[in-house]
Length: 613
Image 1 (spheres, helix red, strand yellow):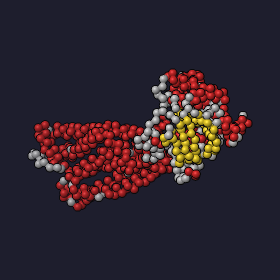
Image 2 (tube, rainbow, N blue to C red):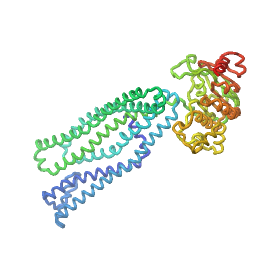
Image 3 (spheres, rainbow, N blue to C red):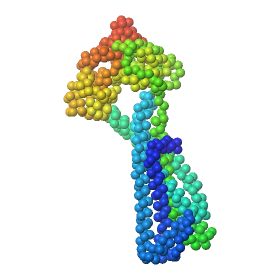
Image 4 (cartoon, rainbow, N blue to C red):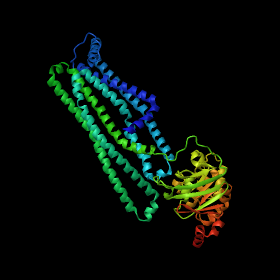
């Protein structure tokens, strides 16, 4: 139950509410017991079975004292006002006590709602903050649908199975303790016999709870996989239909759904087994106690018939909270599976860590330098020469210069710029900005230097304006329009139904690929970074749009420092330096004219492109 303790740590923020809940639940237990103690005298007065008590009983901690005191008060009321008035007094008192008991019960639920909602909010906040702090390498090992499922279905499971049990945990133990005290006050011998059945209940609960947790964990994993199938079906619907694969993906989902159906059926059956078992054992215990009371000490049983009648009433009232605690235990065991999946994310290691006393950088002054950088996505690689993504990469890019990175697919171009922004950390070599290793800079300052436009454009389900000002919320409307014009996006934006206030749908799907790319470029321009990184930024543009892009944006980039990854010769030939990567190594480095004169890899790259045109 490790995760239960971690969830309940959030309770420290709700000390006042917890104190109020515990107080009203104590009152609820008191009023409930006191109402029961009035039941026997009520029936005896009703059926004329009570003997007159003319002297006030001596005080003692026992239900019999309460009953005798009640008889004394009733006798006084009967002598003064008659038996009917006494019955009305008893009935009114029981109604009042019942009202107060249920009022206290509701008050506990009222204050619990604040705690319940607050804990869920805290869990979601911690989960989301961790999600956006985790490195990109973490997400290469996870299915996005499974992560979404943890944020949604698993958190809801924790709510319904763990947090919703808080009131039962605050109320039912008090009730059971109060009932047990009353039972012992009536008869110690019978109560000891009653307690003998509790270890048997505990064993049953433990076995059932362990099975529920194991099945629940597997069930939540299946929900994650099915969520992934839903997400893939929506995002890849065009491909599914284009390849006539509807039957195939439906069959995949059906298999997972059937597994989930079988597991859920087992969980439900096991969970529902506990409550009737507890009730059966309790009723069995009542019968056993009755037989023992009649056979072992019949004289005492007969002499204190009203007290023993109260004993069985109290014992019967103890069954519901006992069943409730049993259900709470099952629910919490079921919720531990979901909690384990949530904390698997929250506890995930943050590989990209900021050093203590990190240096701050607001202005890029001199140069970016790669010194013998080697990189592999496999963390178990021990030697630089064994790295398969980048090997021994070195170059120097001065402020105000533009460098184009070219090479065949899979040569490590995008990885190189990801390392510069510390989306991944290197183990071999060093990357320096202004002579300082990038690991020594504060992450927010480091990434604030860059404006990144990638080939895989991501836009939010919001307005055009909000997408453009993402990360630059203080930008003026004039600055937004200027950035859109530089990216050749202003004209098509004004043709939309609501202009800059038009919502563009999930991932910007209401726009064409070229339009999404231009918005992405405008967003980077509006940030006005000191270093532009364009990773195949013009891949979705046609030749005419690319020409307009070059005329508007490239002069703007030349006023800054730029790193451009591209395949088109027209985009890269103007760069101050061209770095040609092949199989993770720097094959050539120089200007366009210098590399063409060498007639090496870059020359072949350019001539093959001209031939293809």
